[in-house]
Length: 473
Image 1 (cartoon, rainbow, N blue to C red):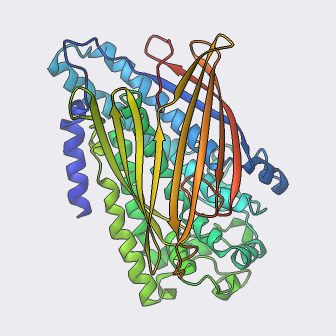
Image 2 (tube, helix red, strand yellow):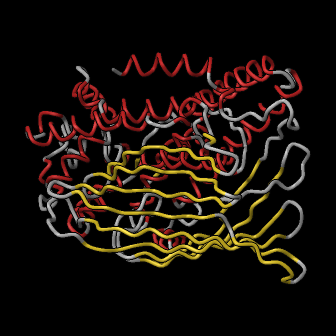
């Protein structure tokens, strides 16, 4: 099945990029809006990072996501401008060639950036999402993608974590430990979601088909990795490398430990046994340690990962126009999380110049499937405030969620967010976000407890001429 999907993706990469609503030839030629967002202050995460001693060594989930998304935006923007000059899309044939060329060169940059650049790439972001769950619990760690600058092998690993810290985390907050294991691929789906927002709401025309396929395939392969013949042997190799506790990855391969601790919230972390070296705890979980129930559950999660391919965005179709007043799109996402998984469907809607993102969530643990709904809308604009322009954008998420994998109750909860943007001129603006949530899991938020948060940052918007582009969501 996987090979069939990948072959289909290659065909779509060649044929369909032009289908994503390039303007008709009677319209003006497209510009390529570029938005750069940088949340400089993120509380309470940075307060927790300061207490952990990692204020300048650890990024919040939203900061890491913004940095990586910005770099991909820049890649697509300049590739679009390059091919706009080389193959000006002023005929239907040139539109097709222009989109194919932009997707190919953008995809090559994405590949090199991710697997050879490493730092600030999706691989770096993946590890920073892992680390966020440790940082808020006072646990220090190290992202080994930084070895690109510090010497050694730059790889996707989180090291320098003490055994006693993991023992404490499992004892005090077992769901947070489980969530930290799954948070890596959570980051990758949020990155794709952010780029999809750019394409649908802002008309950015990111040539990101290759990244869609690359990251989705990576998530599928990673969750299904445990079925490979050499999986347990790779853990032996990992253990042979980690002779000292500081050298060891905090989880090993992510998803056998995830399913192991998901099913065993009351088992002490030290029950894993002694590391093969004779020093410390054996962190990485082989398939031989899984029960039949755990193994079958992980097989199910691996199959469900293929649902992430269900979106027209995957093949470069960014808007589906229903009539002159309405356009839409959709994307399905499967997030393994602290209590099982969230299966969500995002619906992107543009109707009468008002734009909405409506997401339907299905929160599933061992016993129950519970609903949730998320709504965002385009900003409200306020004029004549200090001769500037103020934009306010509300969003809300309401849910019924289980507390853990075995919980039979439905706990109501939600999140409210208000984003304000104050325009400083044609390009720059100050952005402030206030957010409050009850207990529960939210993608991109490291806290499972009730928490109030505040982010403050800057944003810049450009079109192909360097002028401000209108970004509606």
